[in-house]
Amino acid sequence: MKHVLEVALKKLTARINLSTGLLHPQDESFAKELFKFLHKEKVPLHGDEITSWAITNGWEHKYAKELGDLAGRIGSGGRVVVKFKGQLNQDLILLLKGDNKNNP
Image (cartoon, rainbow, N blue to C red; front, side, top):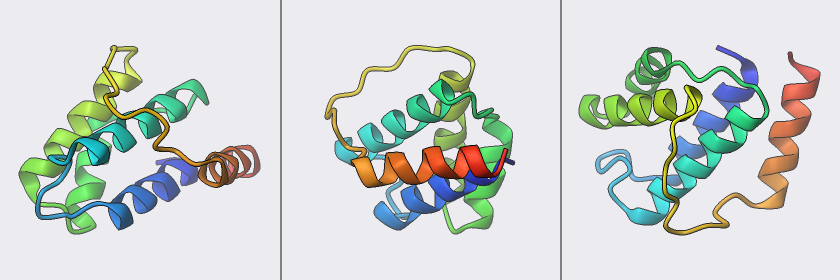
């Protein structure tokens, strides 16, 4: 797993309620925007890898699987609808871009 992906997943994990996963629409939108951004930056998004990471980092199994499935769909070029756009702030975008550049 690329370091930038792990940084992004840690940011996502810190933001959401792990007992409900991405059930809240703003959490789901944040995850979608995050994965779309990473995909645009050419960061590989492998669903199984992300599911395993999420389980290891405290996500309930069913929500970890949903997260991995979402990432895999976006990583393979699938379309998603973001209900609440603008969830990624500029500081996070700059952090992830810098990390991706410095840790290929």
